[in-house]
Length: 325
Image (cartoon, rainbow, N blue to C red; front, side, top):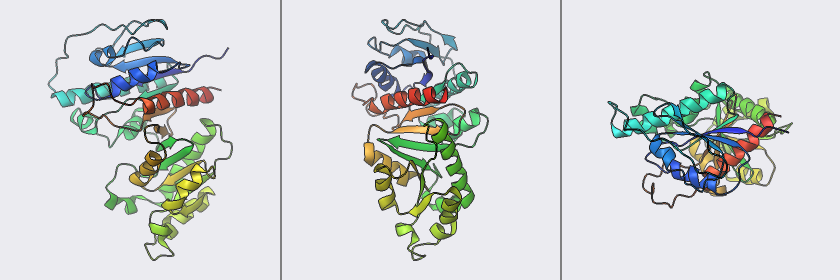
């Protein structure tokens, strides 16, 4: 009998919606996995009694493991006194969120979990706490041994991979090189084969300029930079952003490589807002996350939608199960 996939789930910034969407996502239906939840006491304590799954709890604040309940019991966690810290409240929130990610990655690298699911974090808080990375993708790459990684967003059969991530738009043309597109494509191909079980991945390259530059009328980057990359990858393109995602949604491509953040993110969120999942490709283990942020304005009000977190959990189970075969 195959062993159930084991997930490490971090709750993200303690001021945000992470704890509540994790709790509601776990409570929304059976999840064929063993789950270890990692967060501060106050976060983990917010997990509802109706989250009826077997859960181990790791307290990021104190480094202590709580009780592992049976499937018909709620999570039980010892609460602690507030952590003594020279940090501001925002920096302390970043510290706890960052430490939870560090612990989750260590569990994965040690072989104690098969996949990691991360709750939403606040980049400024992480920076104040000393975790100075553009985003969690880069932080995870460092923790996993400074690996080459790529960020994928996926929903409803659409898979979009970002060639550049958190850059000002003015810096994108210089950052999008043929080598970088090819490297991102190779990472994508490997993940599609190993994690999705697609023997011969079909890639497309999204254009940088309107109408793919229209033979140089609107810039030469598509012909000069992206076309050689597409040829090296045996990928379609570069194809205009106003058509490539429609074709991918119709099943023509397994993934679309996009030159910059917002063109890829917008396509995913329009295609399936609230159901998108962020996947880090290139790590030695699957990592997924919901496609939303901390949503401080609605945190604690009980109105946060857990759909994206549930999708992230389910995809992590699927990818971990396939990787383990």
